[in-house]
Image 1: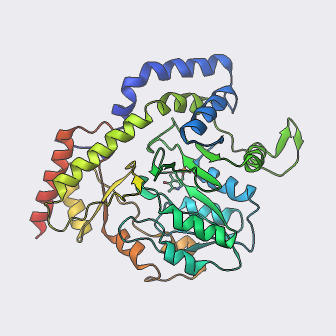
Image 2: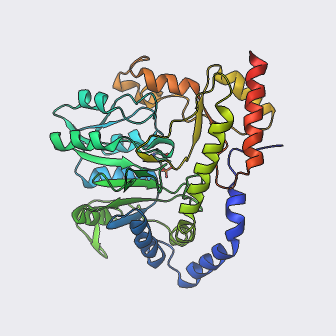
Length: 370
Ligand SMILES: *Cc1c(COP(=O)(O)O)cnc(C)c1O
């Protein structure tokens, strides 16, 4: 039995009629760029994230970038983040003129190590971007305490963590702002590119709204040099339909993760993900760690099990960031994880037969290479 890495078709099929209806409404209304469908989604998404405001934009990358710009971060500033994220986290920092500074992650949760963070703060540091990688929030209390002590902004990269919680709090609601991506494969995915920022800060909300629309505070009145980062009306409509299902779908992901954990714990040499006691994890990615990753993945692929690596090269070792001067060995935990991670199929519509099949193929693959 074949198990794909991701199955968007299974995810969308039961909702086809609702999608057709909302797309029809958008076409009828002509509200294609921003407009009422985006406004309504923003209201719902802010409420879901337990925040006062949500601002829809064109992607998660734009969410991060506009947030940093609106906070006045630019040339000469340093922003601290982690090397085991998608490139966009660092790119957003670079694109507003600041310098990304990386710190290593915790060996068990793969999120920002608060002790390493403390050592990386300099007089130039302006903000910290913890990444809730794979759907598990970073350990926010010590990060927020350090930020407060040094007068720094915390921007959560919640692009993989829609609906996750840290203790009682929603991912995205703890820092000055939280940034989300609605790339199609994310836990809440659009029909194309989209993203959002959530915040409780009214001033930041206003600034980002102006920046995402060419710096206009009124039509053709520009107070700032902004950019076009509006969300499409169709994406707003689609996301509003899908948001209603998100709690349920995240619950399914947690159930699949628990099933994987039970099935994989018996396989020698497989390290299953830790679900931190402070977290409600939303398993955007279910990543295990193994030695001999390439040989195992080759065999999984032969057995028609979809798998992937998030991410094979940590950001500090990317060619694009050679000028920052980091070397191999700078962040041993992130580098070891990058060598050992395999992401297994994870989506709400997985069946328990599929989970069993993945586990048994992994077991076979590992015994074959011994
Ligand atoms: C997906 C992702 C982004 C970027 O979002 P886009 O919508 O693809 O621009 C940023 N950070 C992380 C951690 C992501 O997973």
